[in-house]
Length: 540
Image (cartoon, rainbow, N blue to C red; front, side):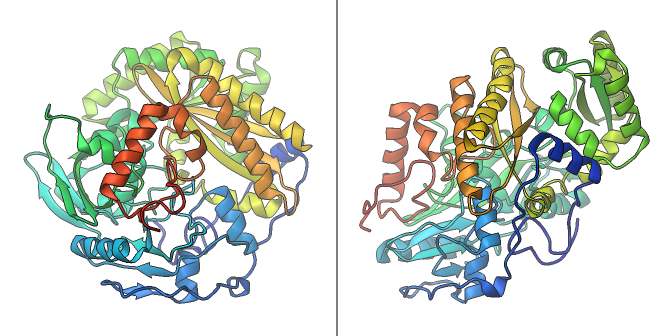
């Protein structure tokens, strides 16, 4: 993994990038036309207002302008526009760094007593506004959990490992490796996202078809509340009422601040293998993916790109034997002119990996698929955590890009995969621009799968966030109308909050609000996310 200082106004490490290849720029220009580049202002040019006066807080506190700026935003599209232009809605009045869970409890008690809003922050990678500071009548303190990191306890007999909430993905795997173990939870934000953030947003990793979502990996959790610590121990199963772990999964700081989590780990695999397969079309790909899941094939990674994503992915790869072969097949054989790339990955005992690969090959050949070898798999493995750097590069070139994801039963995926691009195309036309939408299937289950959409459009200077808002709203309305879930793994944050009633239903929203008030009567815990608390509620 790269080392160095985090970039203050974009993704990843300073000095790291993923330049857009000429073929990819040509692909975008042909479909979208040119947009207005969005340059980045200098950090020194951003005027950070003075912090409001805070009561004494029982943990280390930073109020300097640079620290407050670097904790004002997450990684959503509006966040990136705000950071690049300097038009930042609000700044925290302080950044607090408690040393342990007891420090977080003490901080929450003081914040509740004094009317200070608290926003928990792990790696700061939320793409849905989950850590973005909003305008508040009360002082706002961001609580950095960076000091709560590392492996605390390892139960080798039970394969349970306890980590501090601020532990980042690479730290998790580095701590487990000497014990011959791994977690295998690898979201695209893996390098910079934290254990607490994974639990708080119900995240999924790129290996989730094999290892499960964080929902499946969470065995125990510790949460700081203003009334004290809430510790839910590890149990393999229980029927003692509703599962509190499920209540805390996806709670995004509204019920308390996650300080530690015990996760189900597994032995490191003896063997790992992968393959890229070209299929004749999207429907054939969906049928194949469903068949492999129904057969119970050992699969750790399953990712099917639609024709648009297949074309763009091919354009992203510099000249290579794989790109040349895919291009020849896509343009040379009628069967594959709407071809879709399928990425498969296996891990486990060597013999089982070999058997699983052979069985998968029988199925993809029956679906008229062509195996393209392991080189594409190896390239994806090497570059997958660099792909988010493309957003910053594309903004500089004049193109906006964002993503959204959903999940639905297999029977609805075909309709859903068509409805969202159509809605984005129509919304873009209403704005007087063109859009391009890519889709891939990943995170598959026996009864359905997640669809992940990426959409591009040409930027208009000064209208970037308004353009995004119109496209995002149209896509969200379409996916809900087609029977998809509001989010599969990005969480709710502030961006999905207007639609939360469609997901939870009126009784669910009422239950959420009641539990929020019970656990946070002062209304200080991240009040803008999921279902925002009314202004003034909780003694503000």
